[in-house]
Image (tube, rainbow, N blue to C red):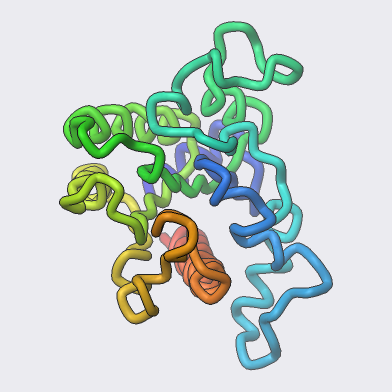
Length: 221
């Protein structure tokens, strides 16, 4: 709640969200469908229809901090920024926060990480990302992942630790995907990319998370 109040004072844009992630966070596969006439949410979910209407223009927003191959360190690296839209010293994350001024930021990272790389290093980068998002006045929503590229689920554990330490929301997609065949992963794509069924489940889970978070924020005393 403190982050939200700070953001209102700093002039974040109401009813907006942004995303930090790789190609699996592009609007074509991450919630973009809710910003089209193919929106699958029907009248059985009036509260979700309200949330879609409020955040409508964010669902297909082209986030500067979403790019094929993006990882936690590259989200902080100016060499990965869009040179046409960003200042020379800005990272993709800093540029997105400055230009879009989102109220909420989904942070979907971890898949682009070597199996032999340190989970402690990943956690340190993730903490930097979270701190920058909070400093901008936006509320971070961390998401964990369905895959296990690191071999021991240590990145999901690191994500959960960061969410706990900063007292911010965590979308536990790993748990949701546990009920899907192959944990929602496509065996023909190296068990890294999600199946169409898993995309749908992830989108719906993210929409429910967005709905829950913004309602909690605006209803706080």
